[in-house]
Image (cartoon, rainbow, N blue to C red; front, side, top):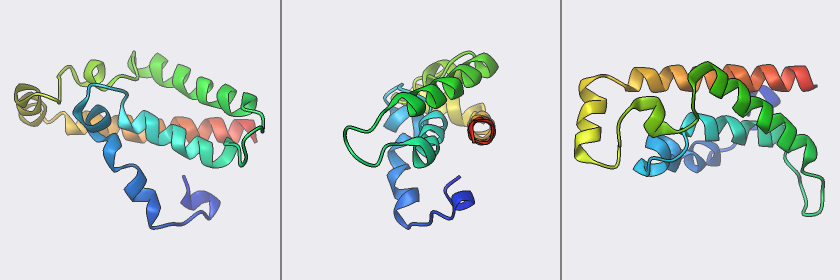
Length: 121
């Protein structure tokens, strides 16, 4: 998403590293969801404290609603059906090739975010 807006930085892949596996295997939000929100924030985020949050919040909420409608949740543990913070969960994830689901979530999150940004522009 950043590249589509001519935003390039070596920092971009680094800032998303801890988002994988439900925020570093804590059973939190799906990293694809958080990454898409970060992309939305590049366009609709505020530049200074005191600026309005309303447009950003509305766009992010639209994104979350669409993702939840498509997949039923934004939570990694619910989406994958396993606790990636445990060895058992990691084994289940690998044995069932659930990384393929994560790729689907990442692709869908990106497409949903891009669609919402295009509609809001």
